[in-house]
Image 1 (cartoon, helix red, strand yellow):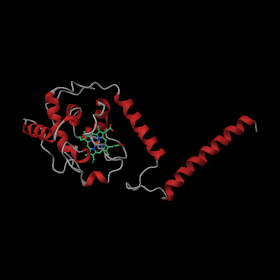
Image 2 (tube, rainbow, N blue to C red; image 1 turned 90 degrees about the horizontal axis):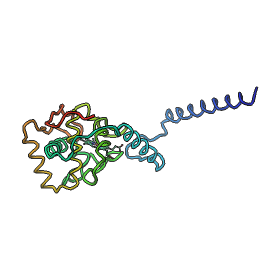
Image 3 (spheres, rainbow, N blue to C red; image 1 turned 60 degrees about the vertical axis):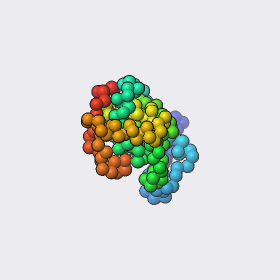
Image 4 (cartoon, rainbow, N blue to C red; image 1 turned 90 degrees about the vertical axis):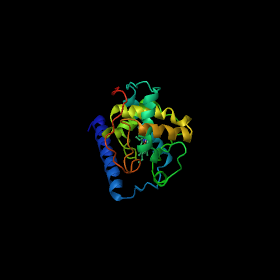
Length: 200
Ligand code: HEC
């Protein structure tokens, strides 16, 4: 056999053995799939990098509407309170039972303003192997942008300001009604809003 052929053959055998090893590990049941057993640092870093790059690549060409539009922010407050605060908290909202056991842990969205395009994409499409749902299954793009607009304001709001906005959003014509059980396992009906049409 020529040296080149030996190299190719050896490479193929090594790849087959490596793939078989990965499958054997999966079948062995040795991996702990429990959410209370956290990833090692290198694995967590790898998954985090994969998630961030995947979202950035898909979100970079989105065109947000005017996120400072008060009507848009207002509409988003009502949707957020009904569908998101259970996992991501809100001004004045105390820690709860569902958040504690979620892994990956839902970020506390009262603490920072997520980059709007990336936030829109993550909200619309969800994040695999995490509790973050794909809200594009139930919400239109305009509604999702309204939530993104609200997320840019939420860290600056007091509890009273937040509650006031939610009350106004719920009272508004066509405003969202909080779906039963929303924020946890609830399946909200498709919400409509006065938000501008999809900007993609
Ligand atoms: C059942 C729990 C749950 C609900 C309900 C939920 N999320 Fe999440 N969300 C998560 C988890 C868990 C993550 C983290 C996923 C990860 O890091 O891989 C996440 C991630 C996100 C992120 C990405 C934040 C970042 O790091 O940039 C945004 C933005 C977000 N959620 C917004 C929302 C909004 C808005 C809603 C409501 C429409 C919502 N989420 C409802 C669990 C939830």
